Amino acid sequence: MDYIEKIKSGATTAFIDSTNKSSAAYKPDFISNDHTNGVKVLTTVLDFIEIEDPSKARTRCA
Image (cartoon, rainbow, N blue to C red):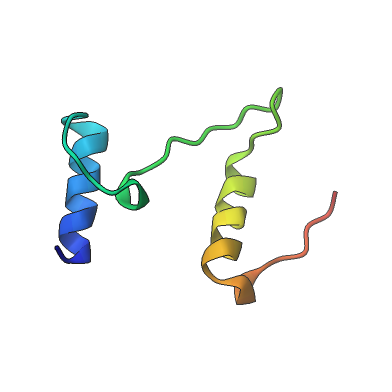
């Protein structure tokens, strides 16, 4: 299965049929700002970018 089919299968599982089997790597995650638990969309996206391409890591202010 090529990556386009994996993306389609992940989207099908997430949005259409939760019983569809697909790779967790290709299922979208729901992220939202939740300041009470310290979850922020921007932080989540930046963390993902750093994991995927460490050369794009940013220095963040506390």
